[in-house]
Amino acid sequence: MVEIPEEAQAAALRAVATRAREREQAEYWMLERVRESVIEAVQAGAMRSRVSKLAGISPNTLTAWMRDAGIEVRAKAPAKKAGAK
Image (cartoon, rainbow, N blue to C red; front, side, top):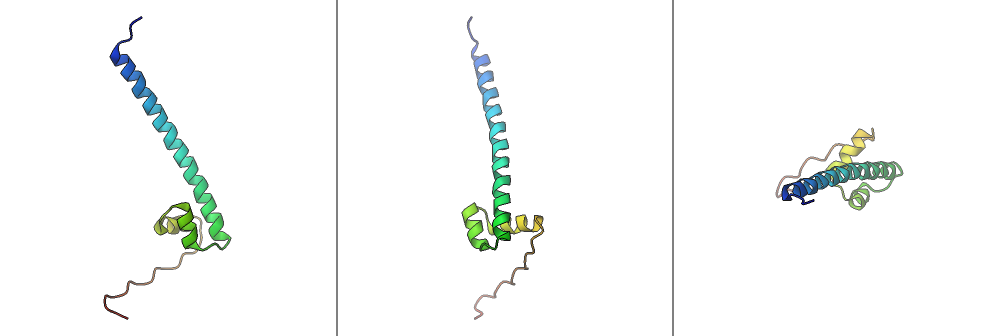
């Protein structure tokens, strides 16, 4: 039986779509595992900057995760004015 190029392309594209969905699910699963570990580390008293760096997340993401977990986050200090010492 001769395979039509369009059929081969369609099958290949279906495989791409399937793998992309699998990757998305795996990334979500891993992100949740990282989030859990981050919260555990903060609750254990680890330095937040170190946790953020090791997890590869921004300080803003760390702050959001902490708030979501019910961990108290102090307000940001106001920005310093240029030229002030």
